[in-house]
Structure formats: C-alpha cells, structure tokens
Image 1 (cartoon, helix red, strand yellow):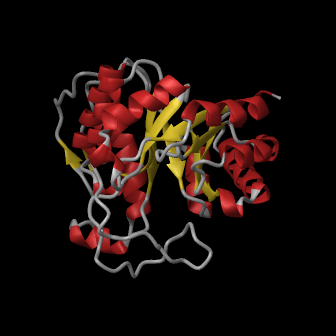
Image 2 (image 1 turned 90 degrees about the vertical axis):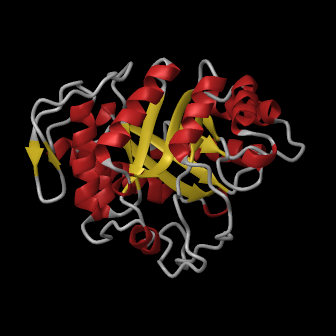
Amino acid sequence: MRIGALVPNSGPWPLELGIPALARTAEAAGYESLWVSDHIVLPERIESRYPFAVDGRATWPTDTPYVDALIALALIAGATERAVIGTAVLVLPLRHPVILAKQAASIDVASGGRLKLGVGAGWLREEFEALGVPFEGRGGRLVEWMQIARDCWTGRPPARSTERYTLPAGMRSLPRPAHEIPFLIGGHSPPALRRAGRIADGWLAQQSLSKLGPAALAAGVSAMRAAAEEAGRDPGELQVVLRLVDSAGRGAEIAKAVPALAEAGVDELVVNIDWEGGDPAAELARMRVAASD
C-alpha cells in the first residue's frame, strides 16, 4: 500500500511555513504522494449538507484561508522531485474546462508527469451560487468537463457544441501533458461510484480515522468494479485512494487499520502530518511496517 500526505493549502501552515517548504519536508520524509484540497470561496454560514459527516454538518471555520489548489500544486511541483502530486478533490464543475485542462497540462509538464486529478461534483451549493455555476446538473457537467480536458490533452481538441459548452473547430491546446493524467472520482454516492468505474481511473474515497468503516469502503470498491465491468473495462486497472482525515500524529492507529483497509481494496492512503512538533518520517515508518506485511 502506498502512503501519501496532505500538504495543507488551507489554514495557518501555508501562510506561516509556505507550501514549498511543507512539500519538501513531506517528500524528504518519504511520502510517495502529496495532495491538496479545494475550495474557492466559503459562505459565512454553511447551510448545505456536508456529505462526509454522519450529521451532515461542516464544522470547520469558514474564515479559513485557502490557497488555490492548482496554484498550490504548481508550487509543490517546483519544490519536489519524486512524489506524485494531486488534488483530493478538485470541484471540477466550478472550473472553466479548457482553462483547467491548460493548467493541469502545464503542471504535469512542470512536474515531469507526476499529476493525478481527484475530482468531484461538489456539495456546497453556496459556493456554486457565488461563482454563478448551476448547482443542479453538476454531475453531468463533471462528466463533460472530464471529456473536454481529455480532448484538450491530445493537443487538438475536436469541435463540440452542447448546452453547456461550445468549442470551435481548429483549436490547439499545447503543451500536451507529459503523461496520461489520471482522473480519480471523489464522493461516496452511487452516481460517484458508477462514474469512477465507467469513465475514471479510480475512486478517491474519504473517511475519518476516528470513524473508520472498512466494510463501507469494500462495498464502494465493489460498486465501482461492477460499474467498470458493465462498461466493458478492466476493474483491476482502477485505483482506490483513501483520504484519511483526523489522522495527524496517529501513525500507530493508522498502522493497526492498514490490514483491514488493504483487505477492503485500498491501494493508497493520504494522511495528515502533525506539523506541530511531530516527526513525519517516524510516523511514516510505523505505517510502512504495517503496509508491507
């Protein structure tokens, strides 16, 4: 099982320590992948249901500063050499599809082909309204935006005209990515799992270490693989990445959970690092012992 880390692009650490320094520290400690999260704006009060909490409540302060996810990845790409870099997850329907494709290709080229894109349909209606993007139909927009990005990454996207977007003929989008950029679908809903199996390169799940549910993960993996088989795809080629929140400084607990997570089908963990006096390398060593058993 691979083990990666969240490089915080929100809260105090990006401003106090700087994203390049955080990324260099995590890579030097041995984490195999480095990930960032995404919000563009937040309302003063969140009324939308948060899908990753049992009670549906988002509890973090909405005055938390967020460095833009793609700018954060560009900073990480310039500060590191080996680690895979990715978004966990980017709210793709909020982004202009062609500009997103250009930004992603540029980051992939700059990093030497290390980019993965975890993407989701989004859950925060207030954010959609602030950006003038319809909240309804966001799932369809996610699917179409993925296809537009893939078309742009060929360098010569074909003309298209839909109710959401029109791209004229004869356009070029260069540079092309350094490698085929994987899309991982975030979310736990049945539509998200079907999309992960049918059109993506895998699933990016999220759970809290305090309320870990390997059985729910296994069910999600099964649903994704079933959708892949229905679409005539090889389910064995799909990745399962688990973003493990509330995990900073809890390497021993994570190590105990690794066998059950591996049994559930998880290929890669994304954990939090304790930036207040913790030892990232020692924490990773504990988890790697369990992951290698």
